[in-house]
Image (cartoon, rainbow, N blue to C red):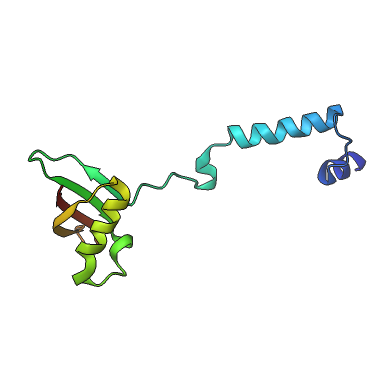
Length: 114
């Protein structure tokens, strides 16, 4: 029981073999544990530029970013988001809501001109 108590309370002097083994176990756990175990997935960007064929730009904007904004002010808010993301002024020509098959809002497509 004494070794278990020392293990739990980390009662080893620094630079001892036991201390080094404990550190190695912790480092191995951090580096080798699959991220799926903790449901830690990278979050997608809320504003993404999409390729287009006609010289205009299209951006995907997550619904959560514009949900709290009144509908009349959404294009102006989208322009602010695009300026923050792209670093240049983009004029939103059209802002279309995108819904799934159950009519649930998934995001917005912002079509712009530079």
